[in-house]
Length: 581
Image (cartoon, rainbow, N blue to C red; front, side, top):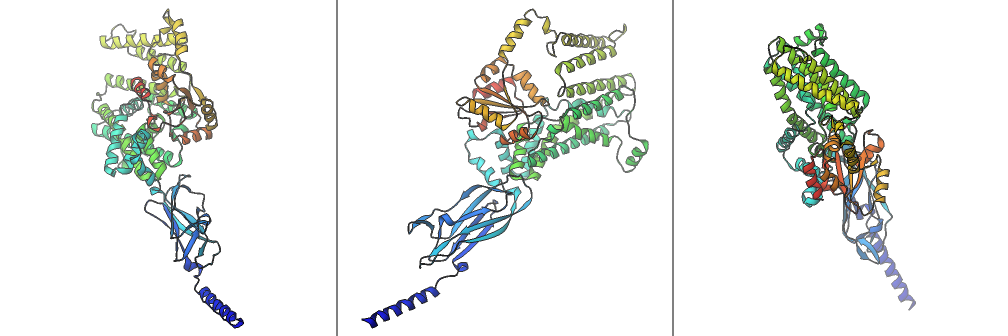
């Protein structure tokens, strides 16, 4: 019996020894990998040999760098094996990244894979870690997310997102033509109107020798400069989430630019002549550059940033696209195409100013004076952003009175048409001045204070005036949302320097039907006038690149994304929009 036991022990030892020799080395049992697919997703995992399994709770994939975070993680289903959740086959994790820091271009990342597994033959390996260096093309990073917009229900897609999807899914030519059309539509909005007297005045100020061809070239230079400026500002806003236009709405910038228009106006009145030094002009002309192009280019560039168009859905869509994908090239081309569309009417105005320019003489003096007055009007309009409305009302009144006197208000012998215009302008401007003295700042009803029912009207107006809770930070907004649980909320992004915001306040928000519908909501106004750190964070959280923008929350304070309003909306369509909520 003793010999039999010895034989059995020998056989068992020999078998185990042979079996130990058959265990795979770690690099044979586990073959980790990591790669980037066409959608800029990270595919990471471990190919395992036969008879090998991995523990689910010991397997992880991480991004070592803090440049990107994991927005979504797709992984295979584990199974139960020896009372543990394991992977019995090769493992493949798919990581969808999020570009938190709005990085651009090609970026290096380090993917770290940690894992531990065992052999069915009874051997468990030590925990292992492997690092892989990969390169991410940020221009393609957000495409998977954008593609999903097409599958989202229509109720969940805002107008801005629909435009984003148009950029993503359309051809280059189609995108450019679409945004060209957007630009032509935006050219009909009040935001572009202040540029009309600017380009007209610039063309007229060229004086004698101005041909239609030169007027056309000057107009094109102005519009191209405007488009370049707006494109640069838009791309920067999309990439970095900042609002360059807001930074240029500070009082000292507004005062400076308004002063420039005053200087230009007085040069048109003949007080002095603005021109570059003769030596500099001669040098430029020698190189084939016509006189005046540099100044027109500068004026177009600055006009786009300071006087230029307001935020609208197409602009917001392009900015969102740039911010999500980092594709500044396509987004920038879309913005440029939109700016060119907005500039087409300005080119027509500029050419017309040159084509129908009267010959030197009394008419020429009259035309330049009119454009000088228009320049002063633009200067006052700009001041509305930084001074009290009563002051600008007085300035408009004084300007109108002065111009009516220039037209020959008190001259006995004067052309009937010219005299009629002078009288009408004087009466209106004098009424505005009287309204200012009586404490009224209305340009549409300057003598409203004379109405016997004015006191009652004022009381009624006060009772019907909308009340907004003002916030400037995420913390303040969250507190208000918490305090108004179970109620619908309207969040209005506005700023003192935003022209379209004033249109909302002075036209849309005073409509009785609009007031009645808006009172169904808790009204909150995000004041982003200062455009500081808190205001930028608040705007970024809700994807707002600039005012005006109105966001709606349901009773559970979930954003009704498809109902977001970007840009100005007149009372009737706004009422229809509110009724659809």
